[in-house]
Length: 75
Image (cartoon, rainbow, N blue to C red):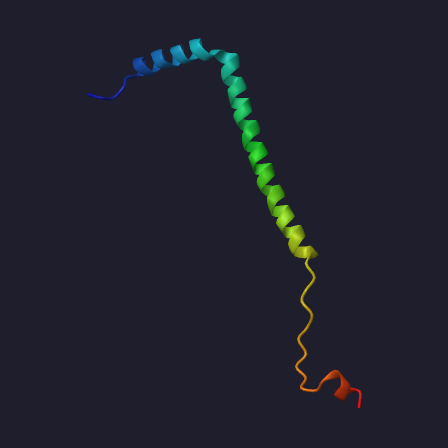
């Protein structure tokens, strides 16, 4: 009780094919695939941009610990 038999799924499949048609269904799947590819491309471009920004940032200058001022160092 409550489970669908093979005949129920067959009727549902036939109705879906009649409503959407074979060409429409394959077009929809192609559009879904294009969307997924575009999403992945966008994510990889975002990662590349972040890496380029990190590589363009110059490293901070080294910290020199010296108690003498520049005038005292020249003496």
